[in-house]
Structures are given as structure tokens and as C-alpha cells.
Length: 395
Ligand code: FAD
Ligand code: UDP
Image (cartoon, rainbow, N blue to C red; front, side, top):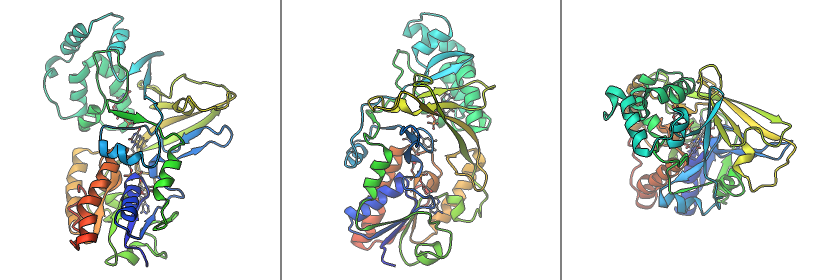
């Protein structure tokens, strides 16, 4: 084996580690992925019939306020000036999302000022107003009051997570801003945009280095290849970004994950819904949202004869499904503590990324965490001879 470092998983976490290890630390890196393409869930491809760029694993919008991450990603791609805006269709009426003064006034058929809307929401939050609840249900009611919560959040969350919102952490809903202005930007971050020539071109540039050996269709746990678990164990440091419970053969039980079934359709119309994302928060619609990809790149000369849409159906992942989102119930968190202990005892293996740490990481967070791992663990090891201490899956 001529690799100094093996990276399992070519998502943004693994790619960042591999790129830095090759360019900054001058190492030979093998990066393996069980899928037949690089990029993990950020991968995109052009739909054959229309040429429209499709996000194979669901919509990926890049945003960050982290200067270091922004400088880093700009080495590989320029970004468009795309600003994400989402609409939500409740009982055959379309509202702006996230909840802002426009949503509130449309919902209550009113013309409240910001102060009046705040006072109303506080009243509707009832006994939860001003508290700091820890679960999603109470946090949602505290943030926007019960009527808006029940219209836009309760069933959407139920469909998306298939878990009682009382059992979900409040942090999930904290991702969404609530604004008492008409600003309906989805994200609050300083920087936002889409890679000018697509995600896959960006991701391929990260891996394009003579010292990076990419092996696709290669599962770490399968025997018979150079970088299998048994071949590399104890021989060379490993950065593992697959599911942490799988690594330990589910010794502490299965962590619960949510997966998404994505139904893609080409329709013979120029524009299906007039927006990139339409959410469906009502209980009687089985999917959570519809993506329409042409709207991510209005500057491209896409065909006017057809459009590509994708419906997202969310469900619990079973073995064999792609584990997309950590569900993170209290039972999961107990198991995770045990996996962290196991990871701490694992010599020469570092756990990273969304699956490896069981954390709901956005792309910029995965990249930021990977840059920190290079600084704090790999660089001291490869330049100063420090031992590789995992520090657990939270590292
Ligand atoms: P991943 O991208 O999941 O990559 C892990 C890789 O490891 C995969 O390619 C997998 O095949 C491989 N792997 C696993 N096990 C093995 C094994 N045994 N052997 C070999 N390879 C293995 N982030 C945003 O910033 N904005 C968004 O709008 C956004 N939308 C999202 C929408 C969806 C539906 C999902 C699922 C995620 C979204 N994200 C978004 C998050 C984003 O996808 C992640 O932050 C990013 O993919 C994390 O990268 P990663 O490397 O940790 O994991
Ligand atoms: N959410 C909701 N209704 C919406 C949009 C979001 O209830 O119309 C909730 C839901 O619980 C979701 C969370 O807010 O899981 C975070 O939303 P986000 O769009 O950030 O989720 P993503 O699918 O991008 O991870």
C-alpha cells in the first residue's frame, strides 16, 4: 500500500481532509467511496433529456458565515448570487417561508405592524412564551404560537421525521429563522450561492491531485481490495466518514436515521411551480416538498420545453437505505455516548462528517470540521509525530 492516509467516504468532509492532506501535508491519500461517484450527498448530475442540473440526493444550498470556509471553497469554485427563498402550500394557499411578517399577515388576514405581530405571537405562545424549551414541539409553539405551528410545522415535521416533535431536539427548529419583517430569505448567513458550474465540477476539483487516489464502488467493510478495513487496520491512519454504528457493527444498537425517497419527473412545461422549493406542510399530502431544479440557475439557458421536478418522501432508514439525517432522540443520544467511548479507544482512526459523528451538519459545517481535524489531529501527527487520538466521534 502506498497511501499515508486512507479516507473512507468522499463527501465534503472526506474531500476536504483528502485535499488538505495532499496539498498542505504532502501525503499520498486514498479516498474510497462505496458509491459510484464522489461528493457524497452534495453530488449533482445533468438530467439526460433536458440537461438540467439535478441534485441527486435532494436540494443542496451553500451558505456560511465562516470566513475560513468561504475562502477555502472559493479556491475550487465561484458562486452565483443565488439567494434561497422557499414557499409553502397550506390548504391550497401559498405562503412565504420561513415564517415572517408576510406569512403572519397572510395567515391571519391582517396588516399587523412588527410590534403588533410580536404581541399576537406572544399571546398565542401561551404558557410557553419567554421560556426556553428543549424539545421541538414546545420550542415551535414558543417561537411562533400554536396556530402557525400547527399549520406550518407540526405535520411537516411529523412527515419529515416520523417522530413525535416532543421527542425531537429543539435545535432542529432553531435552524429556521422567524422574522418580524418581510425579509423571506431562508438563510441568515453572510455568504450564500451556488457553484457556478455545478456541484460536481467543484467536488471533482477538490479531488484532482496526483497524490489523491480515488476508488469508487469500494466499501471499506468489503474484503478483497487494498483499502479494506482488514487491509489498513493498524497499518495507516484512517479518517472514517461512514455511519458510526456500522463501524462498530451495531454493538450498542442501531442509531436511528431518516432517509428520503426522491421521485424525479420530467414535465412538458417550462415552469411547474415558479420557485425552486415548495413545501407541503399538510398531513394529507404524503411528500414534504417539491424541488424544481431550473430555478436554482435562472441565468442558464435551459430548455423551455420541459422542466425537472423532484418530490421528497421521508421515512425511517432501514439497513440498506442511505442514512441521511440523524433522528437524535434521547435513546439515540444515550447510544451515541457509548459509541463515542468506543471511538475513543480506536487507535489510528478518526471519525468525521455527518454520518461519522451522527450530527446534522450543513456543508459548511462539515468543511469547517474537516479543516479543524487536519489542523488539530493530522498535522501534529504527520509533521510532529504526535499519536492520532480519536477523541471520540465528537472530535
Ligand atoms: P456525506 O455527503 O454523506 O458523505 C459520506 C460518504 O461516505 C458517502 O458518499 C458514502 O457513500 C460514503 N460511505 C459511507 N460508508 C462507507 C463505506 N463503508 N465505505 C465507503 N464509503 C462509505 N447542507 C447544506 O449546507 N445545505 C443544504 O441545503 C443541504 N441540504 C441537504 C439535503 C439533504 C436531503 C441531505 C441529506 C443533506 C443536506 N445537506 C445540506 C447536508 C450535506 O449533505 C452534508 O453536510 C454533507 O454532505 C456532509 O458531508 P459528509 O462528507 O459528512 O457526508
Ligand atoms: N420545518 C417545518 N416546516 C417547513 C420547513 C421546516 O416544520 O416548512 C421544520 C422541520 O422540522 C425541519 C426543520 O424545520 O426538519 C429544519 O428545516 P430545514 O429546511 O432546515 O431542513 P432541511 O431539510 O434543509 O434539513
